[in-house]
Length: 350
Figure 1 (cartoon, rainbow, N blue to C red):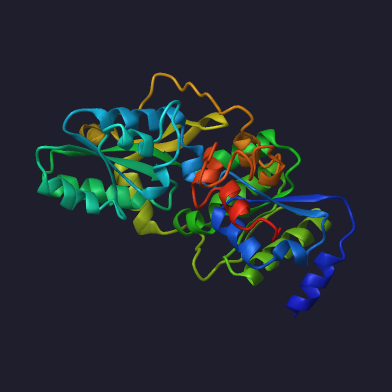
Figure 2 (spheres, rainbow, N blue to C red):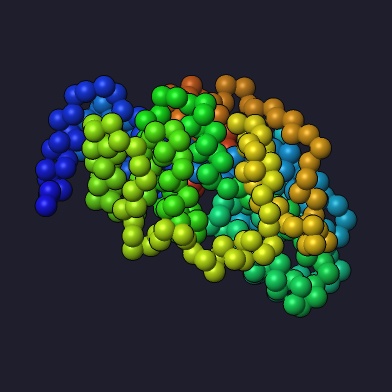
């Protein structure tokens, strides 16, 4: 059996063509810094970030709508903290709160049930943002709303699915050689979800855990596949990820949601890339369909290029200058899962 020392030595000594591997999940990006992975491999093996931060790809018109709702009489927006500083086309929810908007930060969607039942005179709207990892809890929230006959709580959805985005990247970003598939999403959707992508685009997809040795092993698996001109899905996170995923969570998703085309900030419309409430549950939706998606990216902001793996965050001219976590210009600097925020926090360690 090959040892970790042998793996790192082989990866460190690699001197062939440049290899670009996209890690889709922000938690993988954090772990790569935490474990000094780049220092253990050849500079010719590039690890680049992808579109795995839900806050970063949430369209600005969605934030605009939340801001509008917060400013309506007897209305209140409920949200996780990482959405507070993300700008719409004009304001963020933090700025909305400063001018009189009603916004509450919660730690679980189910907190919304208690808040709404204790204040029947306010219409509450939950900002339902995330990937397949968090979508089941929104399904459970709808279930609670129905069971308890709560009439003053709805959700505004911006729920994304990852495989359509990876398909988009495979179609349009030809210089990416392989993918470390997102670990958390893979727990829900299962590793089989990547098989077709690997075969169709002839790129390795490796599901990995979040420890340093897990990521190194995934990089080595990709390295071997590319070396042997192979391209297949490999599950190296078998302790948490099954072939078909979490059937109970998928059942909740399929009960309440259905796929729809959706707009991704910085990318555009991706076919069947979101999950919206089914028609029979529209009464619990606060208006998640938009007529148009006007986007006004901040001048100089390169979040689009970062999300698509074209540049590293440090290559953006605003990075750590005009754009910092305390004064974020683009969404990738705002969220804890955003590539720019992670690179800023760990700058000097890359």
